[in-house]
Length: 141
Image 1 (cartoon, rainbow, N blue to C red):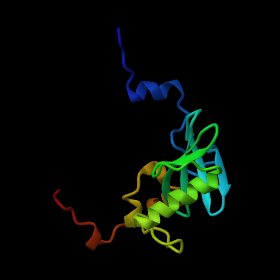
Image 2 (tube, rainbow, N blue to C red; image 1 turned 180 degrees about the horizontal axis):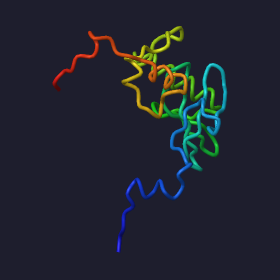
Image 3 (cartoon, rainbow, N blue to C red; image 1 turned 135 degrees about the vertical axis):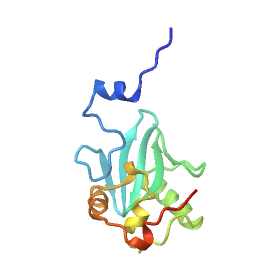
Image 4 (cartoon, rainbow, N blue to C red; image 1 turned 120 degrees about the vertical axis):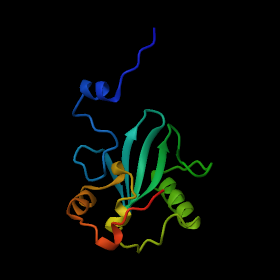
């Protein structure tokens, strides 16, 4: 017999367990490799890390036993920094990431970011955010 647990039932087993902690969470396993922050997500082999640069999440990299890799190319890297730089270079080249001198995202831009990718500071900004009348119009999809 196969049974499935609802998300609510699964959360009751360990209500303190958080999924995808932001890099500012004190319980997050974070590796600082300036200008990047690697935040452990899960896995044993490979271990999966989200890569942040400033206020932007670039993507994920993987720590294998013998090498590192990222989610965008087929290159094996010796160091985590090299995998993060390769990911960053790819994102800049494809135009998915702006230059390193980017400004923090606006509140409107923060609303388009996945909730688990927001930092505590970004959450605080959104709590205080009041949309202006010209930006709060409802649009039919």
